[in-house]
Image 1 (tube, rainbow, N blue to C red):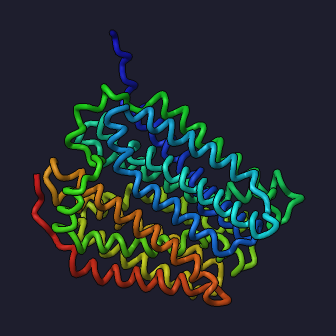
Image 2 (image 1 turned 30 degrees about the horizontal axis):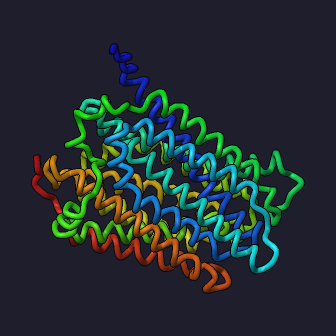
Length: 419
């Protein structure tokens, strides 16, 4: 049987960046903007956004390892297409949810929302590990870091426009509905479904098939996490796993409520919130590559520490900033800090382990991320209403990032590379 030739590497990377951008755009529209607003304003379930996002994170974290193992047997293409199709279904179903009447219907709607978030988390677990594993399958080792940077730039850029696109769609195609009406959010959910559908189509054509990936299975950064590799990682890098856990608890605390919080704080619309973060997001996407090169020049420990410090400082600034222009400034610094520290952290961990153990290390890190984000999202549901101005989750998240910076000074040291 004659195999079809692979597309050129540049075309493969371009398509993979499009997969990353479209999938992340759908994620931001659903999980960060439209769903929190639908739950808080449209369905009057102010405590549910955190629990809903926690469900997503929990399923994604638990499913990463088995989905990675399944992709090794069935091929990345099948998993990526199936996962994005699951997200299409969840978007369409969520768009049809209406305000419940009566206690029984409230329980039924709550259960449905959590089920849809679980399915969406499963879809993400099928997609994202295989996006990065596809780079290892198809790109030469000396160009893989640069390829991953391009993918990071692609999804960071769509994070910037997600809120703007969501607000623009709802304002244009549902102008007669207020934010208290669930039908206000139908256009953005339908658009997100289209993003995931386009991702599925692209994945079908560009994702490596099973026979194209076997040569990298044993040295992939995305090998499934077994109990033994997880235990070994906990023994070797417990404080580094604790550091990433703290950071993602902070992210999980604010992610479900960031849009409703700033919309209420400055009395702006969904589109206004999109305008607020559009500039910082685009700038961060443009600066991702130069920041990565600068971090390589400085050294990974310094990049991790400075980036974490920027994140902590910026989040405190967002909390106390009295004007929207300062929100733009601190939001930009926050994004720069994350882009500087997180890729450096991942590379720092990967360099600490030999190739045969690298997959387990990275898998343990991904699991710490998911559990941390899930834990933070669960806490946010009860803490969001702890004070009238909803500052508590931001105080706690800022404190955790500050603690993370202090911890990074202690545990992140220059180390001898392991081949």
